[in-house]
Length: 244
View 1 (cartoon, rainbow, N blue to C red):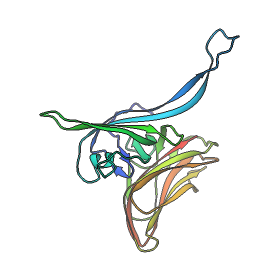
View 2 (cartoon, rainbow, N blue to C red):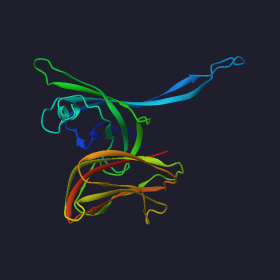
View 3 (cartoon, one colour):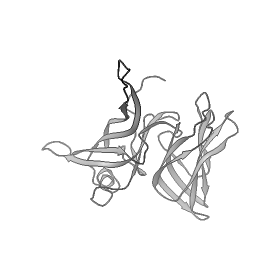
């Protein structure tokens, strides 16, 4: 894959598209503790891997409009959010682009204002739930909008894997009328890019986001399929997956 710019980066937080308020992804990554297990008969340090942690820092512009940066970073209520936040950052506009995803506590939110300049802000996330930040692959082009049951384009990962994995989905806009008034969101896989089966699925009934895990084999080709379980509706969504 060729080197790339940050021009096609997006920011999705708990089902809210904050891309128009963010001005940079300052950092996104993980770290792991290295535990010293040096023994008496060693001439150099020995280490084993300990706990892993993830972090993400986003620089934003202050936007007090409904469902924009200020209201989301203050839990839509003016207060610091305490619940876990699911954050997804697609780093490219095409299916198959890389992504950074994290389930995290929002560590802080601060704003900076000076005469003659726009009000800016900084948000820091720290991973929680025993899962560090994950670098994944998008099966949507940033986000996709559909009005009927639709399969996405597939990603060719060249080979299968056998240790399971995870996905993150963000539901950015939602409507469903009649029937069960919901959509079924699927991650699917295939050995031949022709016959696909479900890997992991979730029914969604509104704007929001979640991370889920699956076990076993993930075949070479991966795509999304979203099914309308209603008489009519529309949905805007983004999906990323990670192989373990």
